[in-house]
Image (cartoon, rainbow, N blue to C red):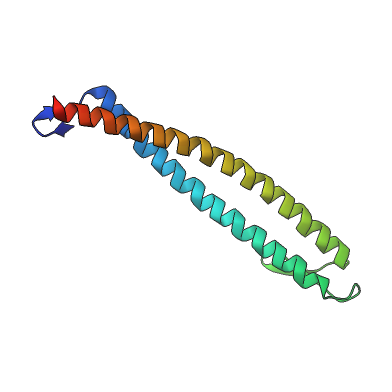
Length: 122
């Protein structure tokens, strides 16, 4: 890799590659985070809708490409709450990973900016 008429040292090139990899990892995490947040909202909407339904009303759940009648309202509410809890745990884990990656990303960005600035001066 060249910078002007100078060769960028291998260690800086490696940091640039690492920086780009972290950036890609962050983008993937943000997409996953968005998907999980969307799933939680959908579950919350379903739980809210179930509040207005009578206990003995027929309720169907999606299982793959099929709609299957649930045994009762409580069963569906339990399934939704379990799914929400599971997704919330995954979301929490993703948020922690995101924080750590952001710290690495920002630290590497600062380091690269300083190194490239010094390289330009030389």
